[in-house]
Length: 39
Image (cartoon, rainbow, N blue to C red; front, top):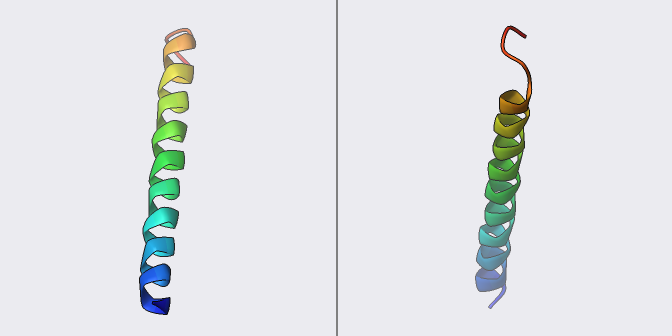
């Protein structure tokens, strides 16, 4: 049972990290689009 909870926790952490990375890339992309060209 402890191994299952550890596995679930690692999967949850990985999902959260993937979500944060995707959100950061999305915000960076929108920021680049909003900037005038040449910067």
